[in-house]
Amino acid sequence: MILPAAPGQAAGVSLSSVALPAVAPGFTQQAVGYPSLFLLVLIGALVPVVPTGALVSSAAVVAFHRAAPFSMALVFVTASLAAFLGDVALYWLGRRGMTSKNGSRWLEAIRERAPEDRLAWAQRKLADHEVAVLVLSRLIPAGRLPVMLACLVAKWPVRRFVRGNLPACLAWAATYQLIGVLGGSLFAEPWQGVLAAIVLTVLISVAPGLWRRMRGTAAG
Image 1 (cartoon, rainbow, N blue to C red):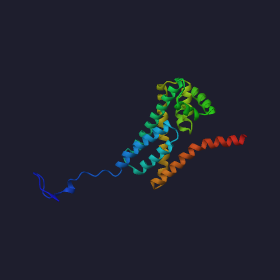
Image 2: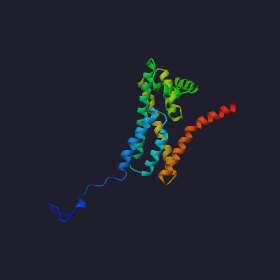
Image 3: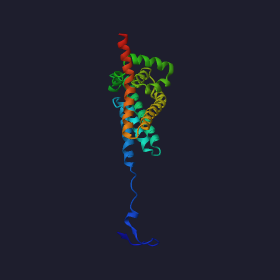
């Protein structure tokens, strides 16, 4: 269909030439992907059953192959912010459990995932190094909750925990994003990089437990 010419406009302008601009192909994926990453990492920080490291690495692979401006930065900000807020919320809930007569299910969940030997180690390291131990706890598999419980036992206020946990979450997001970039750079297809990143993060998470089990078996 040809529109009639408006004043000051050339005749013969078609509807296609005045149609709304098309949505960028990756816009919908980004609009869904970043909130989903934020929500899953947040839930994983509160309920430590979601493999949040693998999620961040996989998102970094996709961002690496997309090569869109600011994609990598958005993955980093989304993951670190979600991890930080989840940690702070869990610590606050744990603090409430410490002061409550009957405790709380959140505090019990932290205690269940912080064996006595790991808690004793965390308490010793926390007394010597404080913030550095919080950063390290985020990078060591199964190290976050024992150190968090050690902070609770030491009666750290939330503000003090926040100051130490912020660099820990930034270092954690950067580390797992780097793993994703490494996986993405090795393979031409995004799904191959995602698979490699997941396998690598799973190996990192189970390696310390396997090593302790092997040492225990050898000692026995």
